[in-house]
Image 1 (cartoon, rainbow, N blue to C red):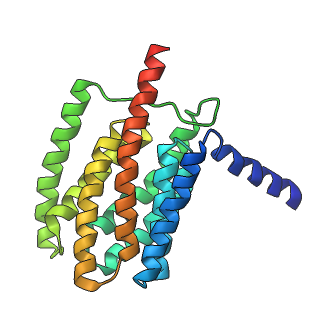
Image 2: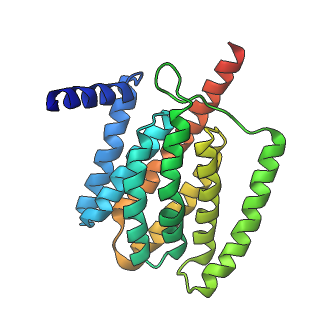
Length: 237
């Protein structure tokens, strides 16, 4: 029985990396190794390193449309929430524990029902009306939540609010397999780089998370281009 389980796991892992080009695998390894190296040099905590690595794995696998991204996302949301709590970034805490964590299971369900023949999800995109509604509601949410976080003595209420609200929006689009998610994720990633850079300046900690967000920013731009190319290709076929 154990041999059968091991074989199934090996087949599943092989399937998750099917369709990857050599350059993509090398980029995957580089992103992880560069983040870990940065964390070790700056003597970051083991929790910080684990959060960063699982976060990178989530983004890379999500960008490839692989269902396994949510397994890494579950671990990352728990660890990242704890680190954010220690840093008094309460918007990030509520985002990760109250939103990301349960949404990972929702994503597993909906992506699992929309897998193509190569075990890669079928991609969609918003129409013009959907984009306007999406961005307008996000701006209103950011303004309201920033006031709430300010009253909670959040250390960076405006940026924390923006990353939180935009992340909620982007996660909904992620579950819906929508390419527009990458536009919003890119904004979130830019703000998160700044937020954790400031935290690193203040405490000298969280180097792993700062590195993770820099790498995630680069990946978000890459996947934005890639997803729209895939959608355009499907429309012309």
